[in-house]
Image (cartoon, rainbow, N blue to C red; front, side, top):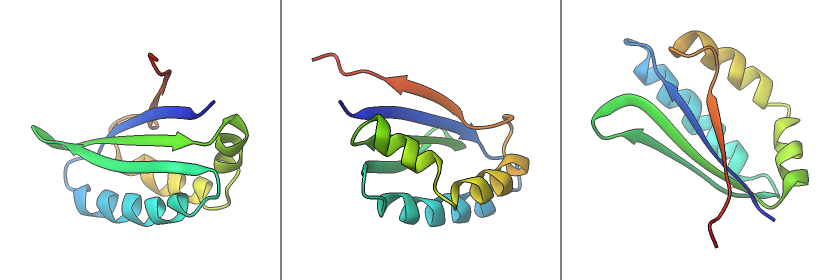
Length: 97
Protein backbone atom coordinates (compact mmCIF):
# COMPACT_ATOMS: atom_id res chain seq x y z
CA UNK A 1 0.00 0.00 0.00
CA UNK A 2 1.28 3.47 -0.87
CA UNK A 3 2.31 5.83 1.92
CA UNK A 4 0.70 9.22 1.22
CA UNK A 5 0.97 12.43 3.19
CA UNK A 6 0.55 16.17 3.12
CA UNK A 7 3.32 18.28 4.66
CA UNK A 8 2.45 21.87 5.53
CA UNK A 9 4.43 24.87 6.72
CA UNK A 10 4.43 28.65 6.40
CA UNK A 11 7.47 30.65 5.37
CA UNK A 12 8.30 33.53 7.69
CA UNK A 13 7.81 36.96 6.21
CA UNK A 14 10.99 37.92 4.39
CA UNK A 15 12.15 34.29 4.03
CA UNK A 16 9.95 33.45 1.06
CA UNK A 17 12.72 33.33 -1.57
CA UNK A 18 15.05 31.21 0.55
CA UNK A 19 12.27 28.76 1.45
CA UNK A 20 11.31 28.43 -2.23
CA UNK A 21 14.94 27.78 -3.18
CA UNK A 22 15.39 25.17 -0.44
CA UNK A 23 12.18 23.27 -1.14
CA UNK A 24 12.76 23.19 -4.90
CA UNK A 25 16.30 21.81 -4.45
CA UNK A 26 15.01 19.26 -1.95
CA UNK A 27 12.14 18.26 -4.26
CA UNK A 28 14.60 17.40 -7.05
CA UNK A 29 16.45 15.00 -4.73
CA UNK A 30 13.31 13.39 -3.32
CA UNK A 31 11.84 12.82 -6.79
CA UNK A 32 14.95 10.79 -7.64
CA UNK A 33 14.38 8.36 -4.75
CA UNK A 34 13.53 4.90 -6.02
CA UNK A 35 10.40 4.61 -3.87
CA UNK A 36 9.05 8.14 -4.41
CA UNK A 37 5.95 8.30 -6.61
CA UNK A 38 5.10 11.99 -6.12
CA UNK A 39 6.54 15.05 -4.43
CA UNK A 40 4.38 17.98 -5.53
CA UNK A 41 5.04 21.40 -4.02
CA UNK A 42 2.22 23.95 -3.83
CA UNK A 43 1.65 27.34 -2.27
CA UNK A 44 -1.79 28.40 -1.17
CA UNK A 45 -3.30 30.81 -3.74
CA UNK A 46 -4.67 33.13 -1.05
CA UNK A 47 -1.49 32.96 1.07
CA UNK A 48 1.68 32.35 -0.98
CA UNK A 49 3.82 31.89 2.13
CA UNK A 50 1.78 28.75 3.00
CA UNK A 51 3.28 25.60 1.50
CA UNK A 52 1.54 22.28 0.94
CA UNK A 53 3.65 19.34 -0.23
CA UNK A 54 1.80 16.26 -1.45
CA UNK A 55 4.03 13.18 -1.08
CA UNK A 56 3.48 9.59 -2.18
CA UNK A 57 5.89 6.72 -1.54
CA UNK A 58 5.63 3.17 -2.90
CA UNK A 59 5.15 1.75 0.61
CA UNK A 60 6.21 2.14 4.24
CA UNK A 61 9.69 0.83 3.45
CA UNK A 62 10.19 3.50 0.77
CA UNK A 63 8.96 6.17 3.18
CA UNK A 64 11.41 5.00 5.85
CA UNK A 65 14.22 5.10 3.27
CA UNK A 66 13.16 8.67 2.47
CA UNK A 67 13.39 9.61 6.15
CA UNK A 68 16.94 8.19 6.29
CA UNK A 69 18.18 10.00 3.17
CA UNK A 70 21.35 11.98 3.95
CA UNK A 71 19.97 15.26 2.61
CA UNK A 72 16.79 15.26 4.75
CA UNK A 73 18.44 16.34 8.00
CA UNK A 74 20.35 19.28 6.49
CA UNK A 75 17.20 20.39 4.64
CA UNK A 76 15.13 20.39 7.85
CA UNK A 77 17.90 22.16 9.77
CA UNK A 78 18.02 24.91 7.15
CA UNK A 79 14.22 25.15 6.85
CA UNK A 80 13.26 25.27 10.53
CA UNK A 81 14.37 28.86 11.30
CA UNK A 82 12.69 30.08 8.10
CA UNK A 83 9.17 28.82 8.91
CA UNK A 84 6.55 29.84 11.45
CA UNK A 85 5.91 26.33 12.76
CA UNK A 86 8.40 24.33 14.86
CA UNK A 87 8.57 21.83 11.96
CA UNK A 88 6.52 20.74 8.97
CA UNK A 89 3.07 19.56 10.00
CA UNK A 90 2.47 16.09 8.56
CA UNK A 91 -0.95 14.65 7.79
CA UNK A 92 -0.97 11.02 6.68
CA UNK A 93 -3.71 10.16 4.19
CA UNK A 94 -5.60 6.96 3.34
CA UNK A 95 -7.44 6.42 0.08
CA UNK A 96 -11.20 6.24 0.25
CA UNK A 97 -11.45 3.50 -2.36
